Length: 428
Ligand SMILES: Cc1cc2nc3c(=O)[nH]c(=O)nc-3n(C[C@H](O)[C@H](O)[C@H](O)COP(=O)(O)OP(=O)(O)OC[C@H]3O[C@@H](n4cnc5c(N)ncnc54)[C@H](O)[C@@H]3O)c2cc1C
Image (cartoon, rainbow, N blue to C red; front, side, top):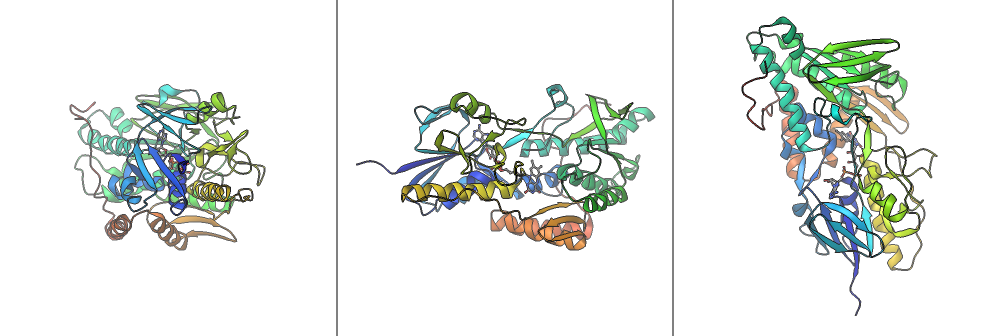
């Protein structure tokens, strides 16, 4: 007797997890593979990077989430290759056979052909990235407290954020609050509110994908928090102790010890593997050009969803790399698999745009929702509600709510811990 249909899902992020959960009642055996043992709520990573939340508040063990789902097993493993001809996902330490494969391994940040910048300008994608950023921010204030040389002190007290998309704007707002409010009473030699925070963006406005009036509102708000915004500006060099920025014909080098990278996205290396092994076409960000049903051309057994997919059939432009795109893609792939097993056809994927939100500091957000554009406190309340709603486990939802309430009234960021290897002696 033939066994049940085997669905292998690579990646337990928004896309992969939503596919797995949607297959709960399907007559299939599901294997979910991820190199982390947890699902990460990336939209709140910047709050870990700025000490407002702890890593465990925004991550939930995949095994726990899927523990009651009888047809699903979770494997901790790194996908290294795909044997398309033999329908096998090759892990760094084994292999799994599939009948249908769903690839949802997401994306990472990129440095526009300057991988050497990463060492001095970390990006934000993983828990490790967030705790590294937190460490750098807090160590900069610690070093400033002990620094006597005015030039070096200025560099420690200068923070540069590259990229003014939602993550850059959110980081800038949070840094402004750390400097002006959270650390206000913590130091004796320095005044944290004297920190200089620069937000650098290549486009002509912050939040370039939002409507111009929301970009303008967001800019006003970050500036109110003490951030200097520079648009139409490009980073041309990143070093341990400086960053060089070109605006028009002018180039300027700023001494700084803290550069945070929030620009540029590159799809997971599995895209390139699909290009080689399945003849997939990639776009400039290495995303896989998928068919209207989210499969790889010529391979109806391989779905690609979320940040790794370029789906341009609906509007002529790729869908945004946001959680909703991945969640809806995951649900669609699950539905399409069930339909196929019943011998039924599935309509092409249709993305429902639920809008975008970005928050800037305590009590302010911008919301670009279908038929509604808002900024200020009402948008922030919507932001809070939606983020709490999508955090995966009730326990974390409750913990985050309590932390936010505490933060709202006290400005305290109790997770401002310097972790990782011993930072001493300080690099003064
Ligand atoms: C800092 C930040 C802030 C964001 N803010 C927002 C926001 O406010 N709103 C919003 O809608 N979207 C936001 N996004 C975007 C959103 O998080 C992504 O669009 C979404 O996570 C994409 O889902 P995915 O399933 O494609 O990939 P991911 O959620 O990234 O999941 C990919 C998974 O694959 C795993 N993986 C990767 N490679 C391998 C491998 N080789 N083997 C095994 N496992 C692998 C990873 O561990 C991960 O669990 C943000 C992203 C970031 C980084």
